[in-house]
Length: 111
Length: 261
Image 1 (cartoon, rainbow over the protein chains, first blue to last red):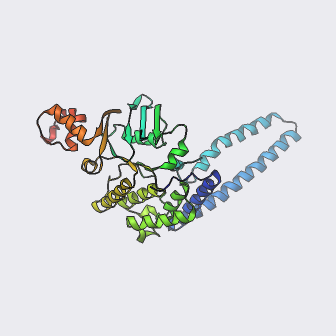
Image 2 (cartoon, chains in turn blue, brown):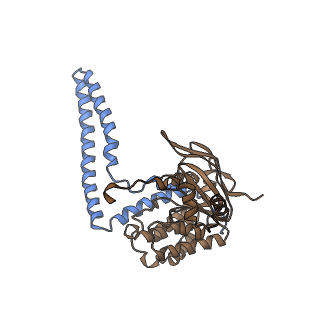
Image 3 (cartoon, rainbow over the protein chains, first blue to last red):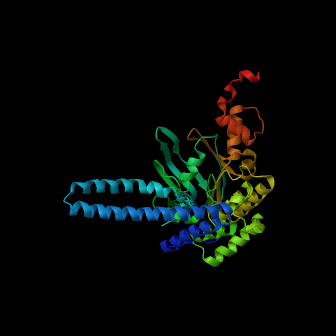
């Protein structure tokens, strides 16, 4: 048999996983469904991005208003809102298809 | 003393209340073509997942080529090849992309990985489908590709979970040729299969697992003579008869279906 090869370093493996994700993305665009999916992701991503930005601006304005008009208890309401958003955010993000199942990489000599 | 290719001591795996694998002590010598048999749900895939570092044992020790898997998983994984249950391919890569990726993940440089990928594609008859995505491959083509990826780095031990399941005779012939070539070069092959005729033809040694426990282990000839001595009828037994004799005792108790009488 061929001699034993040493496992590649962390940086090489990270590069390869990045390359894998890129090829999965590019090859995914070869079909009409893939192109449509990308368009939907861009539109939804832009919408969500604008929503997050608007939410941040509103929170800032709300905080300014609570301090300006001497109503600090309202700040706790805002903090609860931020807390809830962080609970929901990962769920929303996970909806954007993870095509490369990391479990598939377990058989390689990952560092 | 020769280092064993695969050795487990007291290997156990629990899933909650279920003890899927119980106190398994395997011994596979280097260079053996080893078949790991058992009925559905006996613990074959769980064992192979543990042997390849894809599932952590609840208890017990695994040594591959003398290396402790728990202490040196990278060292072990560099020297083994795996065709897991379900194949674990990346459907949106092309065949050459996948083989090159696998080769580089095992530590081959870019040029060597590309050269070996091409050679493997030629050998497996996939060279005319280099532009197709894996998702568009047939089941047999996927099996051949998974096998090619498992051998691209020249592993010393090859683990195959049901390599012949759903594969036609032509593809099976290619796979068998590849495996025989590896054995001729000194590799060890550890495979699970339901196709006992293939196991009998390819493997020199087998182990049988039943309800999570190892119930037989040795060369096919040793098992044959052991079972024949128990039956005392002088008949030349096939592996299927040996298998049924060892694990199929309750087979006779299968009740009739009332509407099929």
